[in-house]
Image 1 (tube, protein in one colour):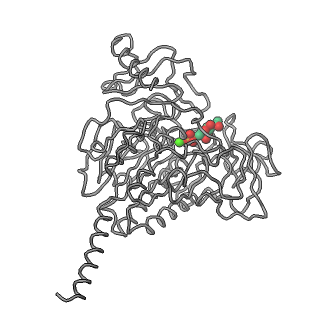
Image 2 (cartoon, protein in one colour; image 1 turned 180 degrees about the horizontal axis):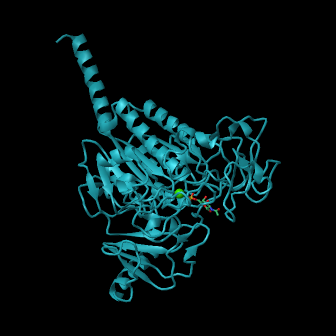
Image 3 (cartoon, helix red, strand yellow; image 1 turned 90 degrees about the horizontal axis):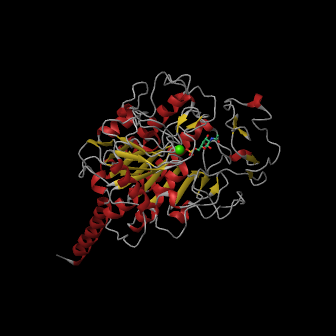
Length: 501
Ligand code: NG6
Ligand code: CA
């Protein structure tokens, strides 16, 4: 062989190996919906709502029936997903206002950092709600740090908190998008700033009225009253009807840019969180009002991502995990007909309670893992939690995280359908804490209110120990604590042990 041919051959070999080793690592997309319940998808038994794209994802993967978020509200749930730690161990991890400081320490290992160490490009597109910057007071008109980048995301396109909290703007790589510097943004959660109309003073300007006594009557943006006050930044404010398209297009761009190398995308959808304001093409498509319509919209977004992966030839080498951050709620602050038009739809499926609740409705999540060609489709009742992503992917990449103190368990085999059990037990968090182990569920006694009037939620709190045998009482209606004192003791012991860690 002459010298030139040898050179060419070695060059081709290098290209081949670089490419093939990159190809071997699967891309990972975690799609996290906001306030979507176990019963909100047709593949989980919904009959009044149709979610054909997510159903297709489920049919190509594993549909979990005993999978959980670690908390029944957004901030602690998302904190756990990204840090691998239970949020109840740390103060200040409750639902954050839109001007909060970052609550994830920048020197801790996180899920995106696990991917980065394995050579992945990482991104978050969607809802953040974990705080930004080091302080509450901050200049929103300059790049804000620390934030997603310091937590491990190479690229971020987010909104800071929730769709019902100011500032109602997007940040790309921690800089507000489309801001006119001559009209600076000012945000305040204590008092009104500037002269923007508020829902309280100018209800006649609202296109979506807030529910009585829920608040959501401060600064009006796009005809919707929000929590918190803001002024300025008129060109940067979002239009709610475009939220899903904006996030979807940024997610697709990230996928396209990184199609040649392994990537991790955390796609944090905001549907069906309030305010529910679907794009026009989805209005009145579900028959259940805007809550149903934004679920149809969410399903469409998932379908578009799947189509894009197929178009790029990445569908076989991409793991998609679809789940939600906490259970469902109908009236969470706006008069959007979610209650009056629910038509018998059961957003939490067979479970009791919902968002905010320590009953299963609060944290038992829709949860689908798809990896075409690599996992056998089916259902699994293995006990898994979003807090486990960190250790499971570290396991996949053979990263040694033994020195890292966390609550995350390597349940990779369960996620891939090879293990039917999952974790031994799990601590769930709402106001109170609960333990779920085998088919038993124990809720620690507490003095919190049992019922939230505003959202009509059974919170699951009681001053006495509660024990439910989920094998024949999935709806947690029959407290069996007196019947099984030993079981109560065992599970209370586990809880104490976890608390003292
Ligand atoms: C609550 C809001 C609710 C929602 C929730 C956060 C009131 C009365 N209700 O405090 O509308 O924004 O916070 O939801 O203010 S979460 O999914 O981000 O946790
Ligand atoms: Ca939520």
